[in-house]
Amino acid sequence: MIKTRLAATALFCALLATTATAKDHPGDESIKSGGYHGPETCEECHPGTARKFLDTVHWKHASKVTNVEGLDPGKEYGMKNRIYVMCNGNDIVNNLKEIPKSPDTGKTKFTGCNTCHPGNHLSDVGSSGPEAEKAIDCLICHSAEYDFSSRKPFKDAKGRVVMGQDRSTKSALTVGRPKVKNCMACHEAAGGGVVVKRGFAFTKETDVHAAKGMVCVDCHRAQDHKIATGLDPNNWANDGTLISCADAACHGAKPHKDPDLNRHAAKVACQTCHIPRTGGAFAKDFTEWEKGSDGFYEPTTLRKEANDTTPVYAWYNGTVANSAHFIGPKGNRSDAKSRITPFKIFQGKAYFEEKSGELLSMDFAPPMANGDTRAGVESASRTLGMKNPAQVAQKAVTGWQTIYFGSNHLVTKTKALFCANCHAPNGVLRFKELGYTDQEVVKLTNPDLYMKKLAERQREEW
Image (tube, rainbow, N blue to C red):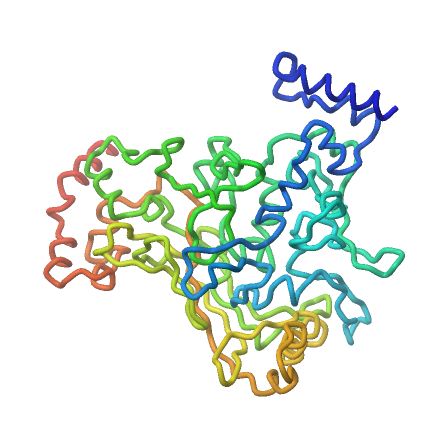
């Protein structure tokens, strides 16, 4: 039976180039007859894919990082092990777990930073080998009919916390390129809720690319499941493939008909004009947690909706300043690689080690159950192998860390910034803060720069 099914699958794969339509998948007949059994079913047509996937950021939550100061070039960094105040923890200390029961309700719940990890948790972030390959949740990214209600943590018969998956035949029969929902199920809800961490929604109302019917992977192209990304100061781990608006496959180095606008591209990032708004959480306090209606606690969070916040602008050359109290762009106007770039600023209050001043991680389980934040610091310190974790927590001091998040979505054409939006005296760019002299600022905010161009546009609109 297995040999027959494999032969049938091979035949369908061989015929793909001549018989498949946009809606056909050559393995459908095999799935219909034999069901879907996870990656082993996918590998009938895509051998070796699961093993390669284990070497991607989506699985490892870490990579070597070359553009952030102060990091060991021989080690890998990412959500697996870094500590910063958007999350104030990582996969090591906030692994998928059952938290203590709420004193008010007597109920418990499962939580953990790696709930978006595309595995079953038994084969955890960064794990390798045959069992890890079998644990990959291929359909969460590739099925158009994935049942996200199936992806919930539970305890198995051995008492282990397991992340559920939808491995139904119905879901497997709708595989294809990832759609927006497949990506945004994790990326929109990161950081503690919808539009919290990155502050954007990818809809036809909020992004010109979505309005054109594009999906995430049209820009974030993949090779062997290694996804292309930009150089966001907040987002360290990457698969070594980068994208930008100016890529030849996208808009190129001269995207405008107007040569004046193309000239700006040498010093102004495309996002500066075409992403004039941002959103999401702009402050969190991990030292004070608020009780929710369900009896559990969450860090106090200040947030706005997408398109509800004005970005801040800074020179950025792709390298990142990294300290206990600041993570953000490096660059200046004399640096040929730097461009004026928009950012969403986030500030987080947390605990810092008394002597070293280093940011401390927090295990969310204790404060989520009862609001005891120092108990969370003690538990995390113990997990990380620090000496005298109780003393570390007791003597920890509070402080703030500021983070610049790249503003790379919510792209608009009709509401893009134009001359006066930046060059008027009350424009969005603070030229003095960007390193221009007083004499240059006077010149840069003079209507002579844009009077004729803006008047011509105004006449066309009338």
